[in-house]
Image 1 (cartoon, helix red, strand yellow):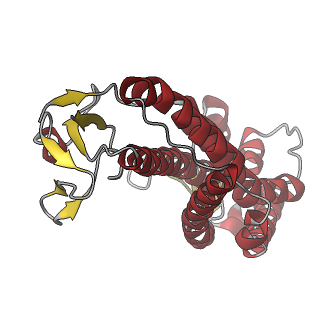
Image 2 (cartoon, helix red, strand yellow):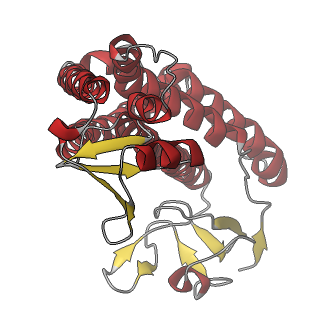
Length: 317
């Protein structure tokens, strides 16, 4: 019996990018936009002041707690502190003076700023508690994207397989719809799991920032940092789910025309050692190799998380 390698089906990265963009947009609109809106609504405008210290407190550059001023001091602020009889203490990295010994104007600024940040933190937590991931997910669907992906695979299959071996596989539009719906729902479940957990983390981080001194900058940093995590997760989910559907759908098409064997081929990007060891070896779709020696998990190319490897189909004749 002779064997012949077929050209592998390769999928454009545009599908990963489109899915990633949709997931990022969902995370932003569902998790972060309501919180940011609350921050903008609650934060009062900063008024110009003749005092550098006053302006620093109102802007959040300076924090006052337990009789100590800390923060990002500039020359003008340092000059005013000296006029108030205060010296920079390297040990505490700040200026020390009891609240009641400060000028009345600074006492008022400190009280107003603390009250504003307490209100800001309270309203942010209220906004987080009001987030409804499940309701937002009802309007999210990846079926159109998956149907385009399936159509792309079908077209490439015709070029690389059908024209070579003369066997055609027709999958009805209804079957494609079922496949697209199944994978869309799977992706939505993954998104929901992450988003629900992210809501809990956001609340914990805001509460931690409040406990640490209620700074507007620290609260804003929480939102920026968590959105960065969400962007990374969106990229991972998009790549993983697109890769999984692509791998499973290609496998079903190959097996429909009697192609059960393939050669494992690694990509040009970084490849984990367990996958690199499989490069060039022959396997069966029905009996995938171990892709993680620590867990014993078995996968065909593209099924393991972050896997960029490709199955080169082999025809026996």
